[in-house]
Image (cartoon, rainbow, N blue to C red; front, side):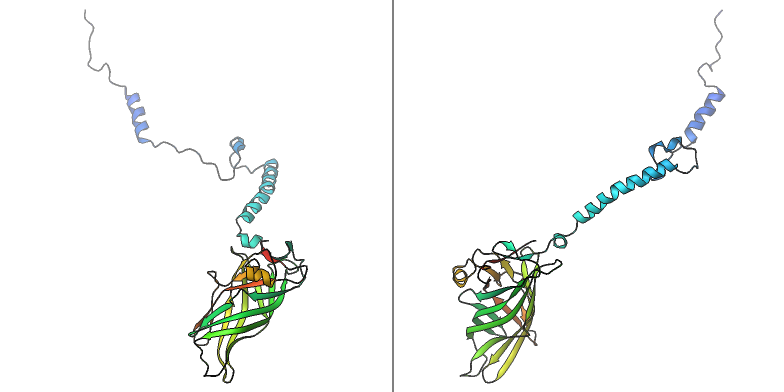
Length: 273
């Protein structure tokens, strides 16, 4: 006798259907997230329990270990200007902090130019002052105590016919401060230059701050200045700036000014640090 057929031989049972339906409708449970800072062995700790004394001690030790590293990393990203400041040197050696070294400056021939209010002065400049590295740290400073312009040629002159026109310094001494750069600059503050007619007197005044670039040389003398081998303050460099008069007219310097020290300390240079 042939076996009986029912037509339902491959139909799933009701229990199988319910299981498959549940798997399709029930969302997958997301993995359990550990709270931040938990240790890998926390899974073995009963739920809701606090870290053990041993784990707290380990955490404190790790904190103490990495804190100095964080401090070093923070220091490493500080600007270089905050970590090192330029100083004055004499004959290749840093000038001892607190020691004032007398210096003389002289313009590189034919002289320094100063253009303002439609006039251009070309003068031989001679200065005197001191350079110092401050006690307790910080960038080198300078004090310009004398500023003399001689042999001035003015084109065109604002003075009456027969009068002599000069450019004289006021508000001395002028204080300066070395700036890290690059290039290293000498920030000269409190400058005052007076335009003077021999009969009429002061006809204009230029004031402000200048920041010429410092260029190191290998000599320290008038001869070296004439040969171009002395250290100079370069007023031709971009970023030197300008002065202004009461009407807002700019006064723009140009040229180079040599600097040297006394016998035994002739070669004055600047370096960072």
